[in-house]
Image (cartoon, rainbow, N blue to C red; front, top):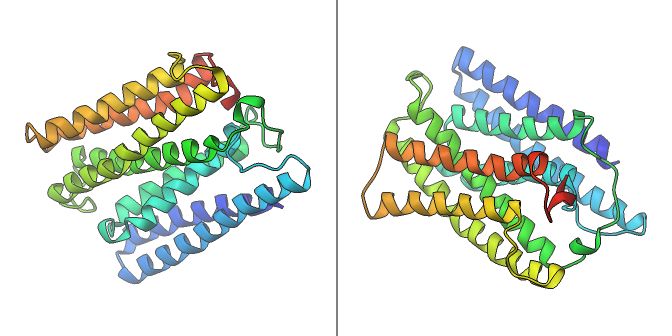
Length: 269
């Protein structure tokens, strides 16, 4: 059942992107009302799909929240991106941002659904994941990633020259900053709870595992962003570039470490 619901969710994300293209073609404001209605419906079904997978794991006798493997992290990452988009709706009433954010969710859902390397069956938890720390650690990390996704999109648009569809640069700069203000404490909480969890699971708070190391690098980059923004007064192109570098570090922490480097988090694939 969960695969059918999540498959429908993937198609709805595709539909949202198509409706955005229609909006850019005709520029009718009523179309954006349809976009937001479709986003709400998609998010509701996405949530239902996660709940359905959770219940199916209990029916299979291996009950756990759907946060335990690469497939489940991809669909939860996409859910978090939509969640942040809805929470920040008042600050993100710009079609180009909702369109690119929905495109990111579509990519994550499509990759989870179509990639032959992604295991989609519900599996028992490995011993290291059998902890209540799993919930708060994974949730805070992916909410941070989702907020950083929005800051990344705002930074790319800041550097773009599509004046007909891109919001004013002052607004993009503010969206970039506000998104990182949301994401940074989430990432900090994720790293701290991960350290506590590692102490219980592996006997040490920090092991310089590749995932830990790159999470720390990502945290340092965003800490530098906040420092140069708040203390040095950086704005504009320079701060947008720092934000882009930070998100590239997020991507490597999530995808690169899984595929290139082996370590204690190898079960994440």
